[in-house]
Structure formats: C-alpha cells, structure tokens
Length: 128
Image (cartoon, rainbow, N blue to C red):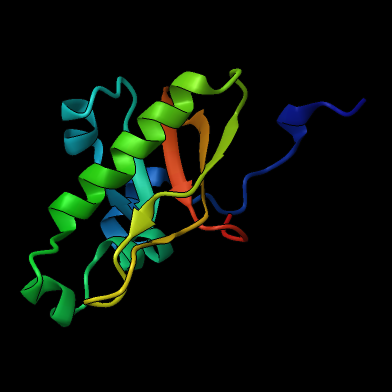
C-alpha cells in the first residue's frame, strides 16, 4: 500500500465554493426551521425544479413554499430510512397551472462537508 502523504492534491473544489458559485444552493437556514440538524444544499437541477415558472407564480407557487415541501418530504423519508448514506425520494410539484402535480425523483446524499462535518446534498438522478 502506498503512502497517501506522497500524493499531491492538484485541485480541490469545496462545498463553500460550490455554494458561492451557484453550483449548489444552500437551504440550511430553512432546513433548520424544518427540523434538520445538518446543513442542506441542493444542486442547480433541483433548484430549477423548486423555482416555479412565471405562470405558476401567478397561481401562488413560490420558491420558499416549494423548498419547504421538498424539505418536509425529505425529512419524512429520512426518518423511515434504515440509515445509510443515500435516500431516494420523490416530492410532488405542480409543473403547469391546472394540471395535477407530478413526482420528481431525487436523492439525498449525506457526506462530509469542508471541515469534515455532516452535510446533506439533494440532487436529481444522474447528478454527482
């Protein structure tokens, strides 16, 4: 086995940088209000689902309300999960006015943050 100290880090991209760059959207404050103990961020793909189109805004949909819905569905799924690093869930979102809400497959992955703390990242299938 090789000594890991012999390897040089060529590049690193921190969670904080990803949030600053908009690659991740930090929902930690809202997540704390929803009962989460760990910081929560979502990918741009998930944020695009959470952000309602103008027609939906006219119907009363908002980013805050949709993010709250996502976090509450995730919280319920996490409580029923058997531990592990990843949980799949599918909250329902209104996609078009006058149509039934549709489920959107997502996954939440727990892992270490920039300082080794526990964090949760919510993403769409195929996003890493």
